[in-house]
Length: 149
Image (cartoon, rainbow, N blue to C red; front, side, top):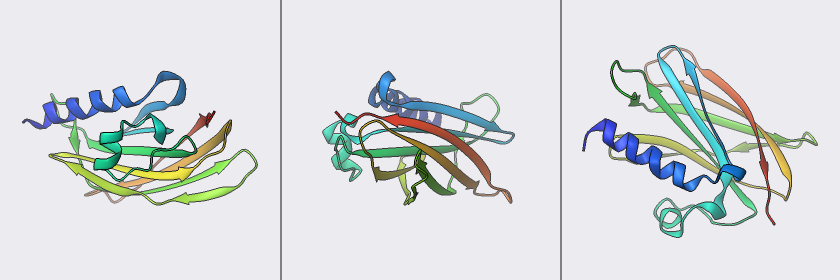
């Protein structure tokens, strides 16, 4: 399967996992790279996907997903390995570092991390990624509301 088809398949699968009311799906362009990021409650992950990727399904758990793509002319981009660090803080200022792990499926590369959430909790995420082959890190910040009931 071509890289483009694998990436499209992964993105379609990811879109099916993300209900509109409970997720953030965004991307940000950084010149040679594009960072895709989203966060959601893990109870929205289908059981077979959760088993495959060792994700704990629960309404009280969140998951962040980061993908780094190198721009390639006439393509959706080439997934690349990156050093990804994520920190989150709630509106009360309580912070947490989220341990990220790399997932590889064919040519697709993405990073996921899990964390606990409370009902009606808003988390502000700070993502720092340094794509392989780049001397500089890129940073993305976004917030996500979680509803557990």
